[in-house]
Image (cartoon, rainbow, N blue to C red; front, side, top):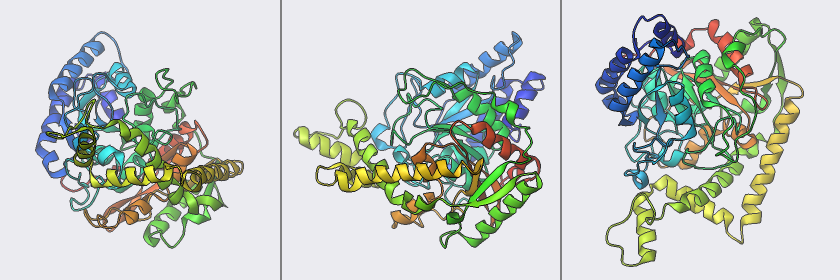
Length: 483
């Protein structure tokens, strides 16, 4: 059962080939057996999972038949879950049990999903390899010495190792698409505002967006259907009708205009990945797509702009963790200033402290105009580049990452090297666009992803292209040895 996709599970449950309780029990046993190798979970929720599975079976017995009814998933550990630890991968929130469910959690629970647990992640979603987690790094099932990508690395590792069919993630600068690429999954970052951020602990509020991680585009369509929609609790949620994402999967690609930016194929890209991307382009051409070279001239400024804006927002968002109201509190503080300094110094890890300091500096009175304001202007230029490009093409295609997964610890002493792994993904967050990564082959036995970007609210188009590609390739069906 663990090799089944979400779509196959939905059909199996509808045909009464197995129950949700049987499926949940099987997967919980598999997690207990295999996750010690992967460290992909922070918390397991066996009792909740079994009670939700029983309820789902009862709903099906009464005639309900939703695609997610009885389907096991896991949530990245920054989605608040009532009465269950929501740690954000940090010592700061190691003892925090949320008093409510995030909108995404509530919507998926209402659709009948079964929550197996909360997955490992970079601390406060800050990282590219899942190495900054207070609970230790998650490991890539394709090579246990390598990172699974970050910050949604736990979700990616668990799905890639067939511990469960799908999981939620969040994407601030590529944190769904990059781990999807490094673990041979399909991962989708929706348009900013498409999925509610209420109850999703913030890193950078103008960039964060929740989305699905699964093995196929079809499964991402099913999970996104349950996640998307307007939420009055979230001031950045957009009141836009949610289409039937599964209904658009089988559309023809005949005449689809695909733009390939020349800036993507620079010296920083592994030439073997470049070759796989060109092979993917040829496959889509066979399906009727028309390929055109385009330019995104301001892409070169994306990394510096992002690493001003994101830390600035993080320094503001994380100021609430002060040892007073909730979260970690130092022992025996001598005065208020000591309480603040030691609670934050002991509760936050190195990478989080680094970004808070960069952000506070960028927002300080003497430097706001020179750094933060200028970065926001560059952000607008990047968005304008995309708007111009989408006047010529329907989607944009390129690599998801410049390199395959790296060894755990290989970039620990050089954070900038890790930041550069986000070079192809962060532009979608800066512009608020939807992006998808899908499996495109292997380099040295490690997976490689191809990224698709589309205009606002065109997630259906991305899923359609990825699904048609996956009907004609088998990369997404490959399973890591031992799992």
